[in-house]
Picture (tube, rainbow, N blue to C red):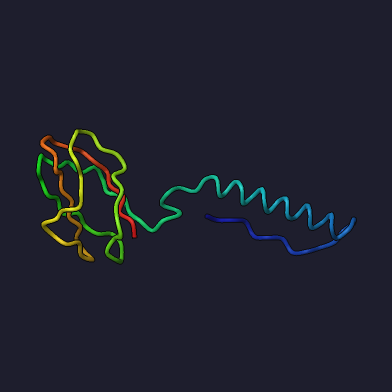
Length: 115
């Protein structure tokens, strides 16, 4: 998030309290505008996969875009009645993540991997 440069303290007229109150109001307005635009990815070190199509029972290898092994994942959305889980057949590494469709039908999903 980018904020404009804060202004230097200069008194033209009025009290110090008035000046500080106006300045603080401007800063709070700017913070409120910026903070309401934050996304999930702005707050959490993560990456989101592209749409992945899993056949029934299929394991998929996904390239790890984080610098560490993820601590978990969230299935952001899916189409189909499968069950997407971390594969029990392969351990996650710094380069590869393994997910599996444990269902009996094809599933398309997007997954968020969390640091």
